[in-house]
Image (cartoon, rainbow over all chains, first blue to last red; front, side, top):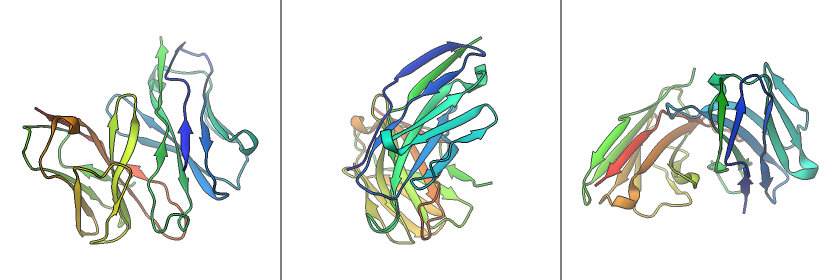
Length: 119
Length: 114
């Protein structure tokens, strides 16, 4: 069974600090996909990134970067020079490839990390 | 842009009522999903559908049913609402072809069952 662990329940930092959100996953499949979503106070989950298990290159998008390491089953998310607008709950999620469970499949989510950026 | 809409942002219902939560997507996506979100538990999959009139149980289907009569619409039904179904309900859709696709979420419906 697949599992996603976000050990940090809540993180609070002062604006402009860098912050890393941890994500550790478990799966028996060799082909899988990892995601990060942001949930601002409005409630809607906003897609940030999708990674497949064969692509271990780190990704950078503006102030956001992601570090995928298969050796440690981790997919960590770093925000550089944090801003108040980054305050949200962030979810890491895992999905196995279609075919392993037959047809479409839901995501397995971590419990989320509540990030508070103080001005 | 993908657009997933949910019929209500907030709902208040009484125990025993039949409740319909509607979700519509405008991107011709094959797959649609219903999750519920509870504090400390994260998001959990209730049901999903990979085609019209097709449905599959997720991790917590008990007390729920679904309907997908048209490709763009996926309804979640609480046959007899109970207080433990008070939660945030999130609908999602994905294109779904030969590889796992990104799921896009609606704004959510906060349901309170009294």
